[in-house]
Length: 93
Image (cartoon, rainbow, N blue to C red):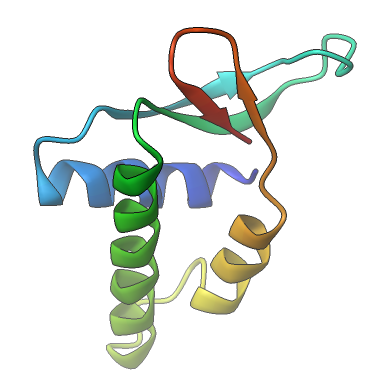
């Protein structure tokens, strides 16, 4: 996942509040040391809420002309997410 997508999801979770979602670099099974950005969450429903909120915020930024990472880029990133779960929540990358 691109850093911009991970950070947008983490920011959305912080704005909503009460969510344990963290963005960080991740290197999982079969990645052979290669790293990508990820978000970790204990709850799929919280993750879904944060993704929806982040998408709405990016759409608002486009309308306001404050675009660095647009909603189309974001949608492309989140539709390609893969997950891994090793007993400490789910990593979405």
